[in-house]
Length: 210
Ligand SMILES: [Mn+2]
Image 1 (cartoon, helix red, strand yellow):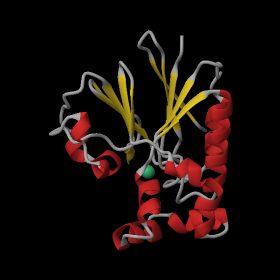
Image 2: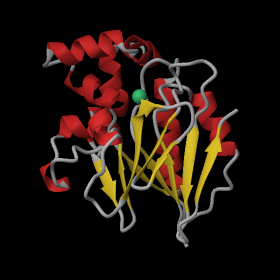
Image 3: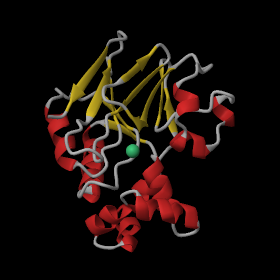
């Protein structure tokens, strides 16, 4: 039976990622769902992406886009996203790759192929959430990577439980129809990176980096 292992908002903290992974007994049929914000803030954005690409060589792995990859990818053609990149941790990513232009030279295929969400029978994995006023097909891509309160504090109409990151909580946000697992890794030195392991029998287990 496959399990889903959801991890989000690593933000360049490759040591916390490796520490978290060391606490999981990974099985060959485990499916990893990485939910975006691999880059910015922490020192090791490139190494984070190398690490999660490597996981995909051994296990099935889904890679979603986060708000920080969205801003990075749009920063050349849009001053607003350039502002976000420059002011919310992007310079750390530029340093990690040894120059902005190297980001796409080194990992262009990875960044260009990021998905906005991953839907299974029981779960929707998405970086920020969905706009509860619209069906999944009608979602605006900016909402999928940036929405916060309107999603978190209202019910949605999907029958899947939504697993999301992007908005930080002190401990996982657990509601009947959604679970948020961003605990501020990369933003706060003492924050733990959280992994959520979803088993086929419906159990939901949280794992934390030190
Ligand atoms: Mn984030």
